[in-house]
Image 1 (tube, rainbow, N blue to C red):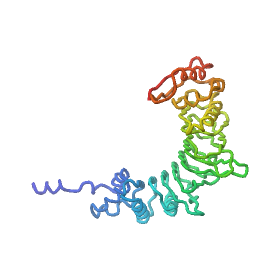
Image 2 (image 1 turned 120 degrees about the horizontal axis):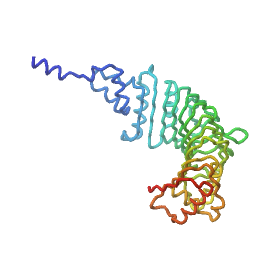
Image 3 (image 1 turned 45 degrees about the vertical axis):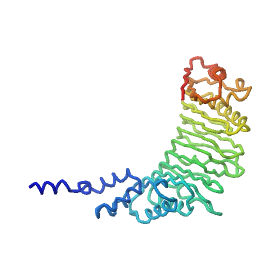
Image 4 (image 1 turned 90 degrees about the vertical axis):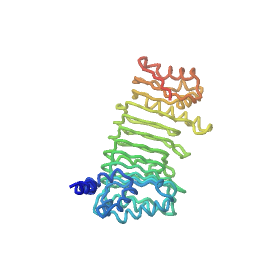
Length: 360
């Protein structure tokens, strides 16, 4: 009886679990770890092929070519009848464009819902990113961060993504129509969150129109484009706006009555750009002044505002402002007197504003 009891204790209880349970466990592993389970026993040999989440990071591989080889192998041997819900690929170093296009096509053909691509890409003459990802009907989350050499990744005129809720774009170029206006987001009816970081306009385009009646959260970071372009907001349900790093854009907007909070953390990239940054920041504040209720400013933003002697006369009146929060760093090169002057000007027509200073 004792020997029988010992045999039961040595039994592989994990392998006895149903496939659905084991696949759920594999979902929380990296894809490399999930594939490695195939050596455990015959029970596990092909189990990884049915996972609906693939997550690969080049930091888990000794060399970049091994990463690419492993990724190709996974796509070739995965169960082709199983949908791919989540795909997360991050690689340092350049990847072959053909492999990236294969990944895109595979994801779309397997009804991908969440897609994160962070790659460096060496572009060959005449190469274009496969357009299928920009018309995927199942996609709800998309992050594209593709640093392309020698040129940036070019997007189509419009994004046909009817189920997309969240979009994060880095290092991409928007294509404009004959009028010089790029309007890529109006065809994404479910879009709720949009992040644009270091995005440019193609050739001689002059306007980037962010037009979407459902959008509630927008983040705009710096551009690496030397030529200024204007951002036109047509986002009537926007409630949260963040502006970061080095804005050089001018801006105009429709009615922003639902706007609650604005976070601004900008700085002048170079001394020669301080005036451009200052003018762009004033342009944003003028557009937002009639709507924003909560405004969060970094110490570097206050420094940009104080960089011009005419700042006080340029600052608009914030008629709905209820809360002003200042995130101050100990290394910020701005005096208490300058901060007090700017705050006094910002709240001059809003006597009930609550001012909070936050040490960071």
